[in-house]
Image (cartoon, rainbow, N blue to C red; front, side, top):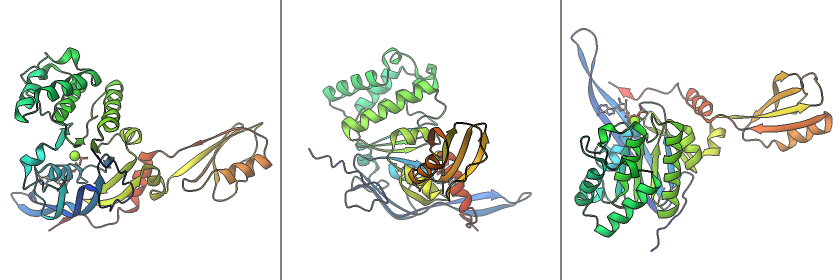
Length: 341
Ligand SMILES: Nc1ncnc2c1ncn2[C@@H]1O[C@H](COP(=O)(O)OP(=O)(O)OP(=O)(O)O)[C@@H](O)[C@H]1O
Ligand SMILES: [Mg+2]
């Protein structure tokens, strides 16, 4: 079977869109306190003319600050929320119109809450999923065995969900979302509150799932290491609008990130007379740090320094993504707020 594993990186307008959004909007009418006893109606534009395409088998990071519209997008993609405008399709299905049919194609994990039955042993939740989705017995067994192995659930199956730790519960939730072989998996903060070991397990599992089954994954997270380790493409959303869509590396350029060249000289020297646009930002003994735009190659800078200075060693450090994104947001902070009267 052709599973069309196209990597539609970039702004992805390709025809093989498995998930497509075309100028999707979501407006909430809310009442907000406006002084003593007074309440004002406000319209919150949570998602604002959002368009993007995700191809089958892609693993895309979906990031942005609090309140950016990430969860709202995911809720529309599952059919929980109906868009106020625009067009949205997942596997050819309009989610809000055919939510049940779509449910067989998608898996969802909301890190903030569980879909498991709180008082039942983990395995009972899986048995219920088995029946709810009418998963063929052999398929169910096979998938369950695989999940138990990859997510290390063996000792947890008979434990009531409420007794599980957060990390254990999260792994249990991910398994539940995948027992029916969904073609796409939405993960909304799947590593929130997890320790390093659990995060590593979850990431390894997702990588394997994507490689083995070409499951399309849309991953929302505040942990940029999730993105670095899993996603070749990242979308940044802010105020309900798409601010960036492309490879992670390109985010550095968009945010005017800088790389750092760390140079060890034979001895302590005055700051290096570096070729522009590189400049010395720190000197400590024989070691000097030079910053230069992430979009530039380090080679000519290194060559100049090597020719003119007694060079012992050097290394290049990539910019910190979090800083890059913060910078990107700062650059656009002047825009009008999404809340309109
Ligand atoms: N049911 C709702 N009713 C009214 N406003 C809502 C509702 N759900 C979300 N919003 C508003 O829509 C905006 C986007 O919220 P959303 O939950 O999508 O953000 P998010 O990107 O997931 O943020 P976070 O990183 O904090 O999870 C926010 O301003 C939020 O207050
Ligand atoms: Mg959210």
